[in-house]
Image (cartoon, rainbow, N blue to C red):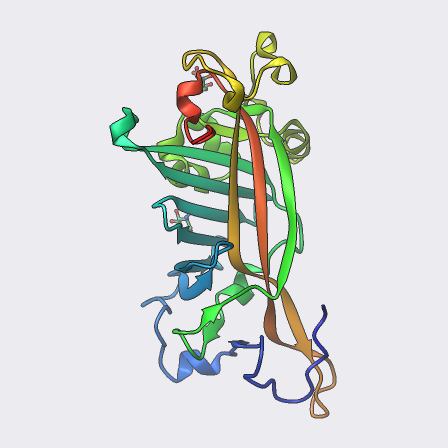
Length: 282
Ligand SMILES: *[C@@H]1O[C@H](CO)[C@@H](O)[C@H](O)[C@H]1NC(C)=O
Ligand SMILES: *[C@@H]1O[C@H](CO)[C@@H](O)[C@H](O)[C@H]1NC(C)=O
């Protein structure tokens, strides 16, 4: 699936639609998305094709001061999915704002936050992301690479009021999800080694051992605890830098990005099936 290396000036054909422009862009006047002042995050809006074939707009923001990237997209059913990568703290945060079905007596929306360890090479660096521009904003983008579905078993709760100790982004991103912020034992172990305070994390009650709990889908009683499932996808994101070679330069140089798509499947404890109503047979 690797594209042949590009030689000399990258062409606009095929996948290489986004160019990493050097400082020149800023000198020539800021195109859309470049913040008014220094330090403001750079924003790129792209049209992307979702897994079901529908098209939506996705916003990608890079803040090189905070060394973070965020991505946001709205699904056709109204769900707002966002992803934040905090490179400083090795943290990534997924958030879903799920619209409730009012006629079923559900609240207006429900928020979920899933926090896991950010590894190197999952997404391009924020400083490269901040320089991305597109030639054709109307183009509908489809990821060049589909990365495998990742299953995550979320067995630890994150205490919102302590969340800033893990990542400063948590307070903003997960403010609506207080009480529904989840992570995993293996990620917690890593962050503790990095010096994060243990008060951020809370083991879910032992008497509700997740493996013994039924899946919410299989349960009738809406007042009982169960294991809920939620799946989400990042439709399009720059996952790797591409390097080009030129006779005029001594070394390969950054000349574009490779785009990826990735889906995640989360399992997590809910104290009442009531909080997991999407996970239900229609
Ligand atoms: C979250 O942490 C604060 C401070 O340690 C504590 O007072 C509070 O009870 C904790 N909340 C939960 C839900 O455990
Ligand atoms: C990003 O950095 C600025 C300036 O250092 C700070 O004011 C802001 O709160 C930071 N944002 C986040 C989400 O950490």
